[in-house]
Image (tube, rainbow, N blue to C red; front, side, top):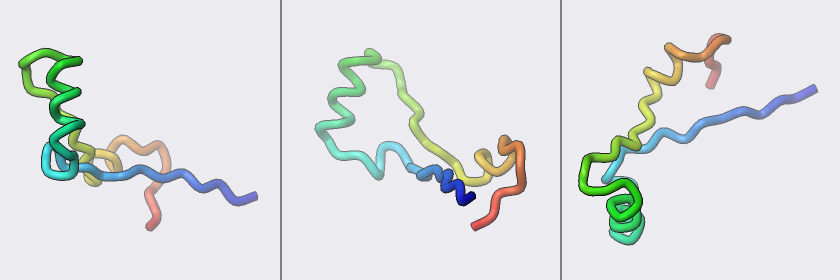
Length: 52
């Protein structure tokens, strides 16, 4: 059996367009929204070793 599980690593706000950022601000208010997904943080939290 092959299981393909993956995560995208984002740098917010660099990897998101103006429209998405505007919608996020309206949805969550004026406070900062941290949508960054850091690969090293992901690896630390993984229950199994991460292989790439």
